[in-house]
Image (cartoon, rainbow, N blue to C red; front, side, top):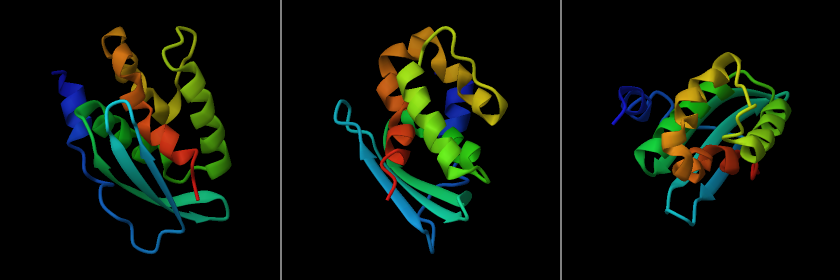
Amino acid sequence: MEKKLSKHASNLKNYGKLKNFTHKCIYKNHTCGDKIKIYLKIKESIIKKISYETECCLICSASSSIFAHCLKNKDINKVLFFSKKFIKLIFNKNFNLSGKWKEFNFLLKKSYFNRKNCILVPFNALIKIK
C-alpha cells in the first residue's frame, strides 16, 4: 500500500457529523458499497465548514479526506462545476489539477484506474446537495 494513500485515509481532521450544518449530501456507490455523508455549513455561497462520515475502502477514504480539505472556503457553485467536470474527465491524460486539487494526482495513477468509482464518491455526493 502506498504511504500517501494511508496518510490521507487516516486523516480524520474533518471526519464526523458537523453541528448546525446547512446542507447535507449522501451518496452510496452501488458498485462496491462505499457510502458517504457530507455535512456543509454554507454562508453566502461560501463553504465555511465541512465534515463527512464514511463507510468505505481506503481509496474512498483518502479521496474524501482530500475532498473535504479542498472545499473549505470555496464558492459552492464553483465547486459544483468543478465536481461535475472532474467526474466526466477523471483519468483523462489532458486533465491537470491545480491548487489544492493537486493532492488528488496520486489517486489518478493508472494503478487506481479500476477504482475510479471509489475516488468519485465524495464528488458524486456533492452534486446531490440538498
